Length: 371
Image 1: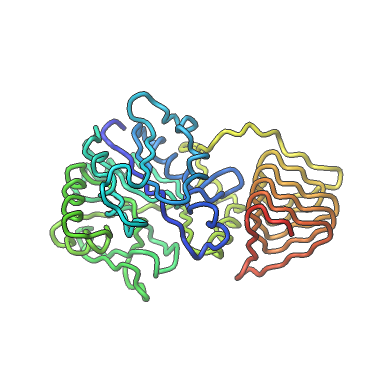
Image 2: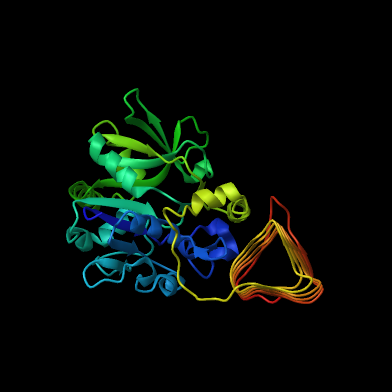
């Protein structure tokens, strides 16, 4: 898609994710055994033929850089265009501390925006798991004559206190936007994915920069709801948003459902990730895996049930893992028992240990811990 440029906000780190985002920002959080959250929107862009992508980062992005690299695994390593990492202070003369909102982040990369070759831009957060048909969304935007098209869901996917909600008039135009309400009375939940012309974006960034406006929803959309033609693109598929440890656990376990897998990992729009060339998973003579999602390179001699396992996880003989999410490199020694546990990368559970959380309060173990 030669006329659409991709911008990804990859600097947000939800404090309610606790230990899971201490060593990384939310975009680089492992998900589904093989993937990072950034893989989903990055793949959506590439699947639509977008060849130029700007990745806006700020803090705790070393893990993200290690994962995306030059963009080769997404066919974005190019002499002209391709993937561009946009770190803080790289394009802004003045910036004090963290970005307060996405308009401030865009102001920080204003010179990059001015040099975009395409006429249209898509903006999205990199911490949402969704298989979005960006081509269909862009086509609707062109045909509708909208100033801004926003991707929405008819389902409420996350906490209202962290989301925006839209109401439509009889013509299908957005006539009300509620940002982070306590009670939801609106029809659609905004996924904060927008398509607009490059010129409109530049005008907005210039205005916000001059008036110290840093939030897109409250500072740009709400004041202009009557003057801008804002229209929704309703995504009917599965959506995973993450603002707490419980969200992460619930969405991870949902991946075990074949219907969710078929929607989120639609082979017509594949989700790409960093190639690690790991061998197939080994199951010992007494190894059992029931109703679970297991990545490559695991070594299973114990029992795994209703769980999601990342690459290289080891479950020794006599160990039991149920209703849990184990990230890459986790080792569960013989006789250990885990239930409702989230183990970050390279965690080691010692022999005969018993760890138990609850479905409403899963136990999260920090990266590299020995328990």
